[in-house]
Length: 306
Ligand code: NDP
Image 1 (cartoon, rainbow, N blue to C red):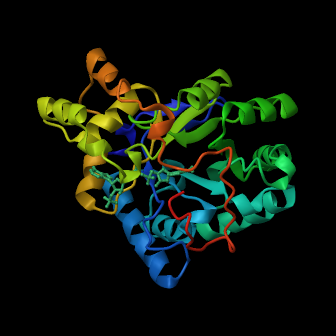
Image 2 (cartoon, protein in one colour; image 1 turned 90 degrees about the vertical axis):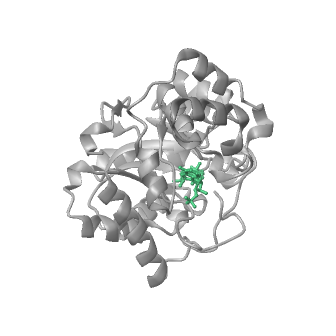
């Protein structure tokens, strides 16, 4: 798989993002940036780059920025062939901390500019409910030139409505939980209404529950001689979503890239759509109430799954 084989999605600011990338949540045993963790992430992300991934999703709170930066530096891949996303930690809302922590993110990644920076969670129960000044500061980073595109993550319809009403600027993407057991209709619909591309986090259901054992996915995969993960990723892509599955295994990383040589028929897509369990299918925390702030920017805690 070469970079040019991965289709791109054009965002509302005219920039283009590879539709498939590589996720780095939990590639380390914990979220600290110990030398061992940096080396582990660098090795895994380095392998992903070698296999053809060119879009990497990291976050301040994952503790993986430094390992991602090390892998990028070692890869020798021209910067303009890579797409790098990071996310503002829940502890860094507010304009001053947005700017300060963004500087640190660039340092961790060893880059002068990143492609996409997202408010990781709206945390509406913190900061007096003010994620608007945080969003304004994110958009100012774009004006400063060291960030190409600003977006949000885990924003519910009300959160999107508020930032757009207050600033007149809509996010280019909303990264939200979406997979066959949780279609997340409300947040997806609001994102599209506001012109934000939908990035599906936990596209394989975070590897939890029985999603990849589902009988419908088994049947569709067997009929096409594809794996269940490939069927699920193809379903996302055909719905126009951006995905970045995570795996620490070479075979799975390769498998997850091989999703551009077949097309699901409309009845196959509908069969997967019908697996939606509504709110019961959500595996991550609810954005209205999630408010975990890491003690330090990079640490391991009980919320290690977000
Ligand atoms: P995914 O839905 O990508 O699932 C990852 C799990 O599935 C892992 O346990 C992995 O195991 C397993 N897996 C991967 N590929 C295959 C395969 N081909 N066959 C079988 N099992 C497979 O979960 P994530 O939660 O990691 O989501 C992806 C990315 O989305 C994250 O890494 C992160 O970048 C982002 N994210 C963002 C969030 C946010 O709040 N904005 C929240 C959650 C995720 P193994 O590694 O052992 O192969």
